[in-house]
Length: 194
Image (cartoon, rainbow, N blue to C red; front, side, top):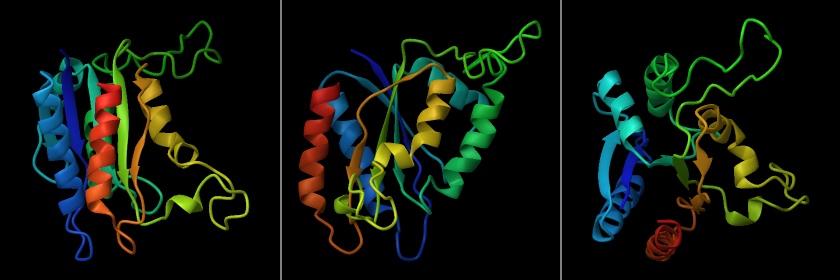
């Protein structure tokens, strides 16, 4: 089977304590272990060692980012993790710089990734309803998809030469939560992709 690194990127807020993201990370861990995968979990709010995290990424065949949408992107604690770990990874663990060469500095930006053959998956919890996306009549996203909104995260992993698995989303988690249905959907999503 494969090696899976789950990064729980929840950041505590008084109105969002992280129970849903923790449960989804644990659900993924249990489901994947049942299927014979080796799984490691890291929580970005806890202490971590940069070199250990680089080794975790090299060990993993797939990285799952379990995160809430916070101001249309990842949480502060995960952004800090990225700044610490992914910046250190530019020395060859995750990529060899940005892929450009001195003899052609205008070509090949983003092609230095050293994680070829590895995959990643975004698993996102958000307050936005599903209906806010993919509809040009909707005010905020104007027809954009979740993956359009999360293009910067997809670009980060493409920078490492990783390939995406389909994104999983729990919508409307604060005003119209359907956690049990979300858990069932997530199990099916994991079964279809691992």
